[in-house]
Image 1 (tube, helix red, strand yellow):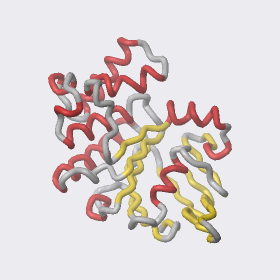
Image 2 (cartoon, one colour):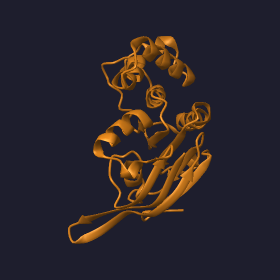
Image 3 (tube, helix red, strand yellow):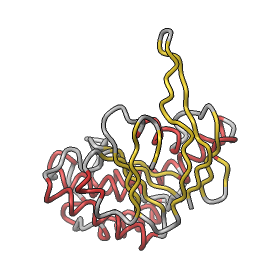
Image 4 (cartoon, one colour):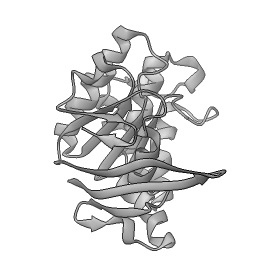
Amino acid sequence: MLKVMNLSKKFQSGEHLVIAVNNVNFVVPDGVFAAIVGKSGSGKTSLLSLLGALDKPSNGEIFVGGENVSRMSDLHQIKYRRDKIGFVFQGYNLVPNLSAIKNVMLPLEFAGVGKLERQNRAQELLKKVGIDEIKSRRLPARLSGGEQQRVAIARALANKPDLVLADEPTGNLDSATGKIIIKLLKDLAKKEKTTIIAVTHDTAIADDADLRFTMKDGKLT
């Protein structure tokens, strides 16, 4: 479960104080796919960076699986990002010279998982996201955008994270493929019993989420 309490992020921009995230509170249970919608500059990316321990809050607390992420040491946060968080990006961010299955195996290797277990877990996840064995051996350049995003989702789930953060996961996809990816995320949240948060400017995509929040001027509604 993700629990956010009184979360704020402030920084100086020249002479001005910018409040990127302004006293945000929300809860997303395990097995739920939630969407955060808002225009550019609303604070979505800043919030996602805080949730993923890529940035530190000015105030407030973030709990993931009962752990207080905002109070962790830098070293503990590195381990937290590796073991407890999965990231899905608009641009897929797959390693271009590795096959689809090796991309999914990569975070497991970083976590010290044995080769056979890595391979079995990757094969299982690729099957769940609809990538067959033939396509699993292909390099990313030989896959469509939708297929690359499926591989990226499988990679994000590799270490059985408590939380998956998706930054505009359908931004590079046509609307039909985008809807398929959102349904996939929603289904995987339940099957993998993980919390999945997606930020998007596309309200039509967000309508399919289990929970929907709107962000404006750093505040969440």
